Image (cartoon, rainbow, N blue to C red):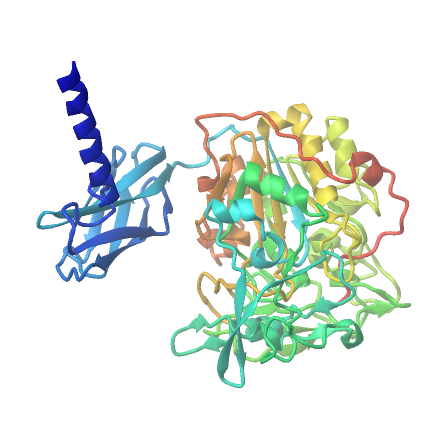
Length: 595
């Protein structure tokens, strides 16, 4: 017995010694000591559709003088998925390409990459998510909640999301007189008494476009104008080499004001590769969210690029088909290849005429609603479409006009001008939720700088909770998206520069549903067209205008955000203000912004 105990003790000592010198780990380099290497994968999570492919960079880091080449292989692949490395063998970085067949097994698995160089081995892992198409019949309702003017780096500085792999930066770059400066993002309240420009020109500032590479350096946000100037910070405490830097801030959640957003993003799907399709502010952005274009006519290459001017009647702004004569807007020729192509001012061209997603819904007898606070607002997208609004008197009219089309005037209109009410919550309670709903906030309930009172996160939560606590949870998908970046710093460049006005900067997006992936970070490239494409897939609609090809024609359909193999019950979203507050809100409605 004593001999056995001594033997066991000896084995334990030897094993401990081996662990201390690193002999047990595949990623620790040379098991025998001496020269070795480690492997790492970036990104560490890859999502691919059936029939698609994705990549991750495998980096070989030499240790203790290692100088050999490494042969790479992958294991743990699901059925129907193949892996290849280029180059292989490799000495620095190799691109791992994972390709899924059309019938590849769906789900999430851990893929191990192993490197060998003689007797030296090392390994690293990544998470692979293979997803299929949107499942027919899974959803009967889609709710699109549109918030205002934030970037992921600004609004979702959530330690939990960041620890789970969300691509959120804590520092930013600023080009000051040709010298690259680093600025640590500083905390700021959701409520500010100043705003940042988010025009097409502000996009060009933030982007710092390089025409030779067709890319954005993302180091020019410091040039974006802050107003009113008397309320704007006058220095940059994070880096005195930068004159001012109000753009380089993230929303502080120490009071819990934005906790509803964090809870939704941590619980359901948060997309950190969601981009504006357009490169500008709210008026064209809302058109893209309704139709996938801001073109003046169906086949025109002239698109609205900014918010309008000269659009007031008696001190009140009216856009779209309700704008007064002489109202103007910057437009851009989208047949041009890059965003530095100059805009031109067009007058009396705010009443657009092209197909929208609602035309497909009408043709398929799918009900829809567009809930907005005010008529004539740049955020009430249907009032800028001629065949939806049918302005009376005709546009442009010297006397005040109204939208007289059936979408506005039917006993149960599709366009719901609700003031400060939360009519969608009432419609949910009364079992009257439409097949597709767009929901637009008032200024107070938006997240727009210099307009909101901090109620936006609670307003969104009240709608999400109304769906989640009702029978509609069984067949409803909720998409929460921000219409533009608002001038705030974001480190990620556009997914590509397609032409003079597409694509724009990142905006946050969350997907909430019983079939939504839980606690999932989507690294797949999405844009506003993806939301339209998702609706088209849910209701089998086809594309808005395949002959021209709007944003929906070239976008994905958010499939990676869903797992149809399991259905999850609703998790309530706590918030400071509940549905009762918004149902009985007596404040006069205001638009989300007026810039």
